[in-house]
Length: 157
Image (cartoon, rainbow, N blue to C red; front, side, top):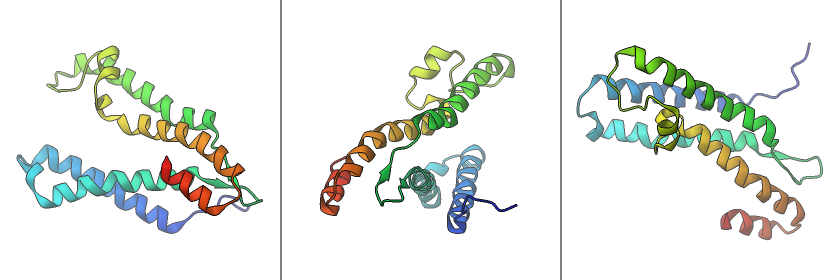
């Protein structure tokens, strides 16, 4: 049986490196006091999420057979991004009061959803917002014939 999806090995490697950096950043934060000022920690913090966002953005882009731009499937992305956000948020709120943990995270859904960082799941919301922005941009790009107009549209957004 032939696998129809083509894997890009470089992206798999990049994802592995980014996952390692995320884990290392969290481990360093939990284990070493004052690590926030260290160069290596700052470097990890500056690199790991942009790698994830680059890969996610690249994988969201689809070219049509005619060389145009296909719009992302918003329903599919909504399921992929928002269901985990809501499920994990609800599980945290149910677990937290019984955990005996002292945490800056919130213990009720309204506060959790209103917090700036969304208690750790901010990136799923960011990816969804990017998809919502990319949808009309991809529609505009598919109608523009000039490469320069396409580039100008992308730069303007």
